[in-house]
Each structure stands twice: as C-alpha cells, then as structure tokens.
Image 1: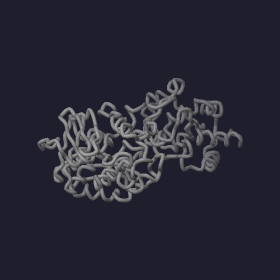
Image 2: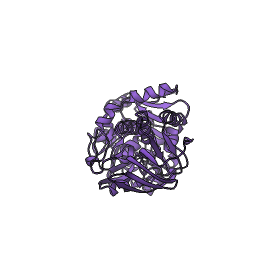
Image 3: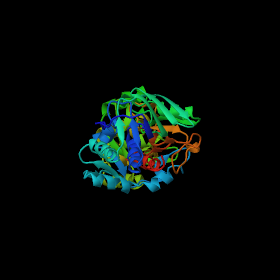
Image 4: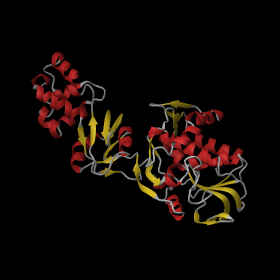
Length: 407
C-alpha cells in the first residue's frame, strides 16, 4: 500500500517510478536525511516486481558480473555493480527474514511470493521517511536554475533540487509501461539508443508452425547460438514459435533476418554416441536412437522435417545403414539445426527493453546527467540490459543505490 504521509509541495528529491530501482534509490536517499517523494502513475506499487519470476521474484543472481549485461558502453555498469553487490541485497532480504532458494545457475527466488520483496522495499522506504504515491501521473517537468525541477502531476505541483528518472522500459505495457522516461531524457538533450524487446519469445513461419504445432508445450535442453553468443538452457515449443530460457537469452543478441543455430544434443560427443548406437543397437531406427536424448514425439517430428526427413527416411532408417558421410551429415544437422525466426512476440511478452537512454552523457559513478545538473537516471530506462536470471533486478538495486548516495 502507498505510504500515508501527507503530501507537501517541496522536496529534496523526487523520483518518477516506484519500481525496483526507484524504491531502492528512495530508501538510500531517505537514510541520508533527504526528503524524498516517489511518484508512480500505476494504481499499485511495484507491479512488475509482483509478476516477476512467475510470482516469486528472481531478485538477484549469485554470479552477477558486468559480462552479464548488454550496452553500447559495456563498462558503464561496472561501477554500480561493484559498489552494491548481490550479497548486499541478500543482506537486505535476510534483514526481513524472507525465505529464498537458488533455482538454477545462481538464480535466487523467494520461497513464497514476490510481494515479500515489495514489502521489503516499502518497509525500508517507511523507515527512511520516504513518501510514496501511486496514481500520480507526471504531466510536465520543467527545470529552473534557482528552484530546481518543477513537476506538474495529477496530484498537484511539486518541486525538488534532484529528479530521478526510474520509469523502466517498454516491456509489459499492460502493467502500465510507457516511454515517458525517454521523453524526459530527450527533453534535456540526451540521446537514445533504439529500443527493442529483449528476453522475448520468437515467432516462426506458418510452415514451421504447421509441422511443430502439435508439440506446443514440449521442451528440451539445447544450446542456442547467434552472433557469437550461445546459451545452454531449455527451449519450449509454443503455439506461436519457441520460448523458454535459452530462447529468451539468445533473443537479446538476435537481429531480424538472423538464423539461430540449435544444438539438440548439448554436451554429447555425437561421433561416439552414433558409433556406440551402431555397435549396441544396429537395427534400431534412428528416430528411436535420437529419442534417447529428446522426447519420442520431438525426435520423430524433427526426423519428419527439412534435411533430416531425407537423411533419415522420416526417422525409419536403421542406424547401421548410415554411411560415414551420412553420419557426419546427421551429426551436423542435429548440432547445427537452423532456426529462422520471423520476429518476436514484442513488448507484451518481453521481460525487458534493450536500448534506452545513452550512457555517454551520464556519470557511471553517480548516475547523474552531464547535461542537466540534478537529473539522474537509474534502472532499465538506461541502455543497460541484463541476461535472464535476476541480473536486471541486480542492476536496478545497484544503480538505484548508487544514485541514492548523490541525489
């Protein structure tokens, strides 16, 4: 619930956006004795936090490193991440006795529900004397050399010496996401990096869907590669294309027209595996051999499609009947299977927004604009995007905390 502190008109700091980075910035500044107001146009505080992680909030990652982030300036995130680490946020979680568990690959989730993280942030804001208001739409921002920033909102007019833009990106428009933060950035002369959906499912052609649609809901552990990046996690077949952690990860490196290469047998020496099958099961149909590592339905469907259809006689060819050249071609097709997305499912299904406010005129130490004194940018609105797995939350905590020390 919003904090029931009476609204005044003058503050030291106003933060636009009551999400992860905004609330972290607010509590940090509040503990420094700053008078802080947080405004959010949504009807509920922390809406994207609440739906994250399937409702259990993947709040950080144990293995957070700068290499887990995409940006035109890959060095920009280093300072914030070094000064507020995943262990620092874990300490805050421990303070509130929130039970958590590691799922896979260092991903830390709440045992119970995402609301626990929102309650933590609101509890810290309350303790730090921060005022937080929902249903407060900012309509206009004006900067004055003497009076700082003047904000006209649906709840009245407010002023502050420091203004923090923590508005997030464009993903999940049904949660109230808008491009307002980008408009403020441009108003004060900041360049924008093109925004596109990130960590997003792929859509595929009608031909592909007609063949694979019966497998909607089937998943497999694969390695996906595109533009010199690769991820080994699950791929999920959907009624519109493919999703799952591996797809979401590689989507951030994909450009329209690119092929994504699928290794259906990650971690397997295909030459040894096929030779072993010839020795032990020479009469076995190749689709049954492949189904040792994939579901039977998926193995058969792959054998009925594209090059594999001719190479395997629709999966019926006994493994011992393959020539050496055919075995090489089979191994290559199963480990370098081309996927050609027609597009993505867009912002409505994207976890994050790639691009945003260019970092070249923002201080990596303070997150303050170098064009407009007193203006700060934190979290997803900046051109810093993490991998799937808690990295974007850690960027929110780190950038919000660091800006909160200077506002």
